[in-house]
Amino acid sequence: MKFKGIMLMLVMSMVLVFAAACGNNSGGNGNSNNSEGSSDQVSGDVLMDGSSTVFPIMEAVAEEYASAQPDVKVSVGVSGSGGGFEKFAAGETDMSNASRPIKEEEVKALEEAGIEFTEFEIAKDGLSIVVNSENDWVDQLTIEELQKIWTGEATMWSDINSEWPKEKIELFSPGTDSGTYDYFNEVVLDEQQMNKEATLSEDDNVLVNGVTGSKNGMAFFGYAYYLENKDSLNVVPIVNGDGEAVEPNAETIQDGTYEPLSRPLFTYVKHSSVKDNPAVNDFAKYALENAGDMAEAVGYVALPEEKYTESLDKLNEIAGK
Image (tube, rainbow, N blue to C red; front, side, top):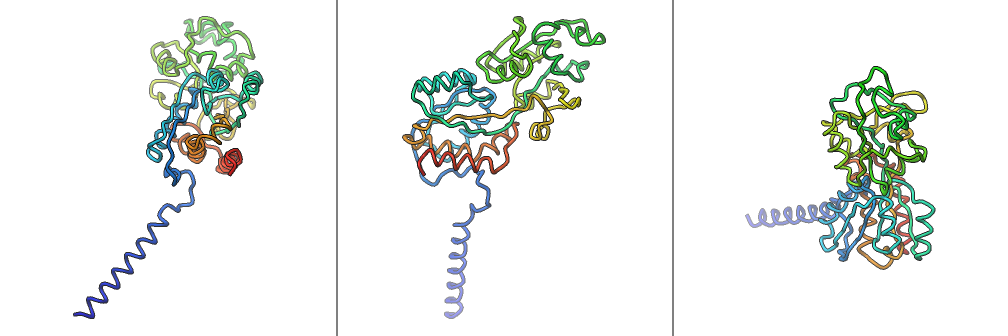
């Protein structure tokens, strides 16, 4: 009996050692895009503002990050890409989100303020044209037809197609500080004046409510907002350069066939914040590690894994690591 007791104790000890060894390796699934966060605890504030299109991604990242670093307060504002860059240049934020590349005049403002920064692409989006769910006549549109509608050259559905209703189109657009507005202005409007009767708002939810509340409504915004409201909206297929009517989805946005309305999404990071504020450096690293998963979780399209790896290397260079 004494011998059996000794053997049992030896076996249990071996089991405990084995379990501890397995526990030390439990996180090794080879995927850096997880929500475990850094091993070192940090504290502080991270201030971010900008694009309403990028907001769902960064909001999701910030919520996950809070469980990893509870002593870091991350603030994510939504003043539009242009409004975000104004705050960035004024030194009010550490990171600036944008649904379009930074403009030359914005770069100049940052240079004059002595602010060094780096651009990071974090995901892809398909700018989505939507109409009311009761709209069963718009089956596709060309960029030229969109331009006629949004510049006011065509004000009735029948102006586009004589078989469509002789009813006035009601337009809802992102505000002029929005990167989505800028992108649409460049690609669709060709820098022409938007119809002054369009209702503008920096809040995409206002645009959604406008279209759902009007049978003749039309709006445009990021793909994630369409997905979130797809049960009450119809998305319009857009004729691409090959003459094919294409709806936005993960595949067509990623492979570029949903053109010219597929676009990259960005966050811009201030160098001094990364170097001087451990919370900013840690959050930026976490954001780049998890941006792909969070983008897909909220309805956008992740980049290839190597793109995030390259961005992390770039961030480490900025931090001097």
